[in-house]
Image 1 (cartoon, rainbow, N blue to C red):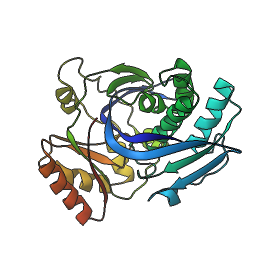
Image 2: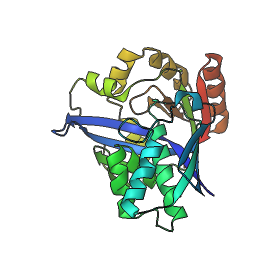
Image 3: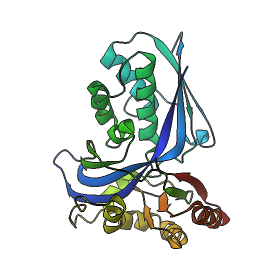
Image 4: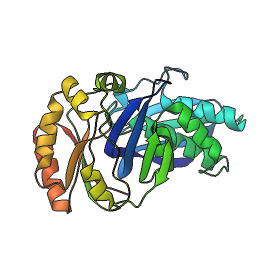
Length: 277
């Protein structure tokens, strides 16, 4: 049995530069990862099987692999094709992160599946072929596969590791609203407001940055503004992650983080107190 964590991803800053000819958007983003998230378990089996457990299991449908299938199944099929693996696997996804929420849940699950299968079959988890698979699965999957703080450029797949903020108290909050990534990008105003500050202290770079998708997401889900207002008190930095609707806040200590979690839960929102890795 191989058990692999699929930690939540946050975008400390997310700058959208322009739309590319291939339909993707040219991005600059600071990826960081939480200590907590989903879990993927893989065991050898007589036939392929996929099951979903956990508090957000009901929001996922374990449909057939393919363009419309779950990313975990698609990752497993792509791994088998790339490495000519004949053995079958039973995969269980323990789903603790909300779906369509801007914290890389599906991407993290796919990346964890690739790492778990690689470990099971004696393949290095930094094998370049895994990153080729990851890039084909989605723009955030390569960063989730690497699983460390990075500057992402291109559509997010060109990654340069940077010194992180390990141990920094982190709170993730989602108001129970799923926001479609495509709809948010479609509402982006198309204005290039410049890149992320180069070099220097990571937290300073993040604070000087922004999330260019936040205004578009607010137009779709105005409750995000209420989440950000709730998180602002006592935080070093609070911002929407990815295309939303999950927002995050970084704190100087656990007491301030946990107090913010209490405030968020008073609204009936999902809240995950954790730390950066």
